[in-house]
Image 1 (cartoon, rainbow, N blue to C red):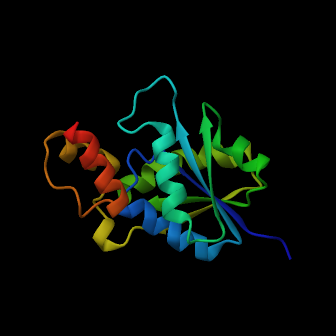
Image 2 (cartoon, one colour):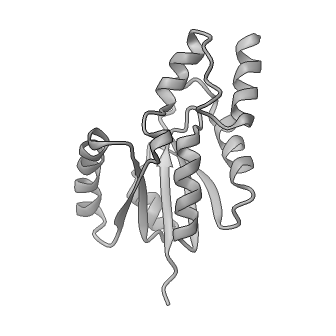
Length: 162
């Protein structure tokens, strides 16, 4: 029987409870799940890349089949092939996300027809949670604790106090 290997990618800047929900649910669907921190090294993010990776590794440690990897300026399908991925995993919060993701799926299918994409709908509690929303709340020193894991909250609050 062929192993099912998933790849869930994002910038995770910062990691949200919505991200974690998708990771946890996807880990139950696949024999192995890679969580790919994809970023553009020419853009400055809020959270340094090594911190995002560390958070994800700590947050997924209890999930025995999840591995975090990093990629910069590389196509998702190239990373997927290198890791023998069978399915790309994407989270959808609503119809706008579906349109956005469909455009990527078009190219991914043409570049790597052997890969299929699995879409997981956000749970209602996370439908409007986004990293950009968390960054906005943080910038205005508003409470963002309901949208990120406690580990991430503590670190972001500590950094904003400096």
